[in-house]
Length: 348
Ligand code: NAP
Ligand code: ZN
Ligand code: ZN
Image 1: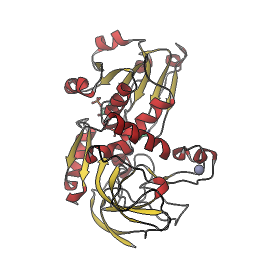
Image 2: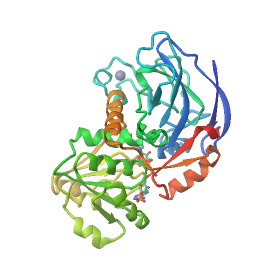
Image 3: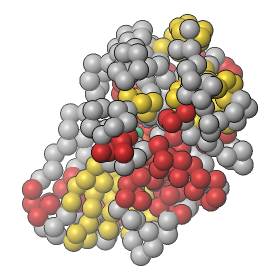
């Protein structure tokens, strides 16, 4: 076993604290990464708090992992020691089903293995531990390359916030001639704005936070609507082709669906733990769709990272000391994140 250090939640709803544990030894197709930065996703907090399902504890959160390769197995073909490398939300899948075959490992029919809060049933039946740690061992087929050109800390959030917004925009071919609304300007939302603009769409931010309006232009958005202002909403009725919804709390689907044109598509990426309530008439009137999307496959994650290197796209971040993780969570819950916290792992 490889000795590793981390911050872990000992049990559900408990505070994270330093924890020493063992990573598996580097296998023939594995790489060992020294983790330099890890992004803080709203999903980390949801899982520590058992909001989705009973978690596996102790839990080391973190699935926006970037660092350098420090060891490689004898059969590794695509990485050498010293390379930058990154790991996102998945570390394994069955590798045999139709979805795995199509590069949709996130939708593996037998079940993908999450980077943390999961059991690697295809390998050793042991729990997986995430990126709030000094090192990780992953199969090279679930490890991606990142460009030396991009700011490393600001690249970390691309591994979840980035791919989770890039994937649906590509799938539904959002681009030139489309009006895209991004609902919720947090970690995912601000990446959706950047990708929507880069793909050529006219982008509107729908936000509950008036203080974020000043950042809208800086992020490249064309318009900003304060969703607490009924007059601003009234003007936007029937105007969008797509809404990309990143909100993790109950919200009014009748209202947001009324902002779509006929045949408009409301794409849910935010997780509302207790489920959502969609009034039938809001769908019927205008033949509208509500759809969902989960992260992205490994090849698509690499494609997104290459796209970011080409277009110089990274997240807007606030780098934190790991001991301040709970203060960061508190601010995230209040919507006070500009626009992703990233842990400097040197502080571990
Ligand atoms: P975040 O940084 O906390 O951003 C969420 C934003 O939503 C907030 O900043 C806020 O923006 C807005 N918001 C919060 N509560 C709201 C409410 N009650 N009504 C309206 N707007 C509200 O979170 P994140 O990391 O981007 O994650 C967003 C969601 O996506 C979480 O549920 C997370 O678990 C989920 N997620 C899903 C996937 C996937 O595969 N589909 C992947 C990663 C994360 P404003 O201040 O602008 O209103
Ligand atoms: Zn995430
Ligand atoms: Zn599969």
